[in-house]
Length: 353
Image (cartoon, rainbow, N blue to C red; front, side, top):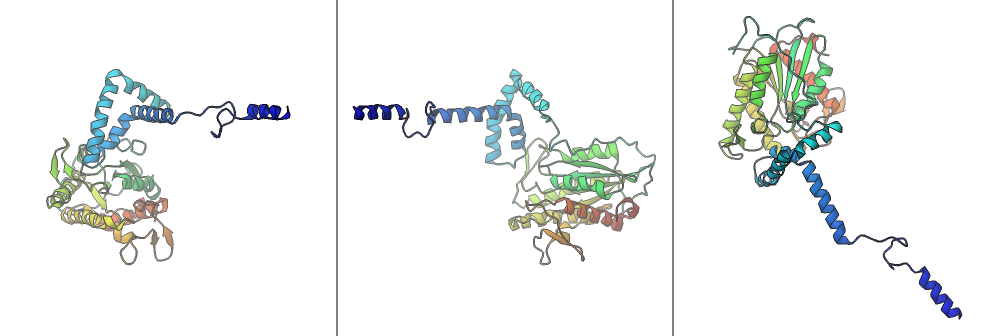
């Protein structure tokens, strides 16, 4: 009798699913159902973010990855547009504080372009370097910063270096942009708009980090394949045309070169880019090249995360080994301002010494 009672008690206390690790009364989800739920979640995420994924794919270099991504996303975005789903997604995105249709490269750090009347006697295409005008509180200098994510950095910290009473800084940096892909973002067209509308006295350019890819037209047609002999002269011509646009109404250009990266594999590419910038600056009036590589490199010419000004050693590079940190951008922008004084007699009172 005792044995029967013990056996019944043991049976009642035994879990329904021995060995499943779950508390009594709870049932696990079969592995197949888990996989289905994950796949449905990924599908829903893809539908919701298809337009943004497409824009990211458009910024990628030409190649199999970009082609496959666009081939998969184009029909999804097309269907969403036709059934009105895109509008609903955009409304929900805006409610969360994001702008789904902002400009390429992001719009948070891009300033609106002020409209400036054309001067009565404009100076166009000077034959030699000219002096940057002396600003007043009534007529401050217009300094425009254009380029990629590196330009976004110096644009933000230019406002710390230049005195706001004498200089209006107009930030125009856009991430993931360059001169190679006008089908993604057309920098020459944007520079034409900047010059026509705002007539900058000084344009600070930092471009080229994203241009290790083939050159195409605004319509996406191939012009020069990366890695071929056609690329260097074709790219240099784009730099020349861009700098000529920026100075076409009497403005001045400081083209800030690319710094060396921690990844030494990229050094040859960066040196070729800087060579093109230097060559154009040597050729065109009112254009000067600022050598960032040698300014911030180690004594042996290699990568260094620190800058030594003769007195202090300062950490200036970001963790990614490409960009600068806040101190680095501030130091770089101060050096660029001093360089503009050396090259174009920029009034030193316009920036913090």
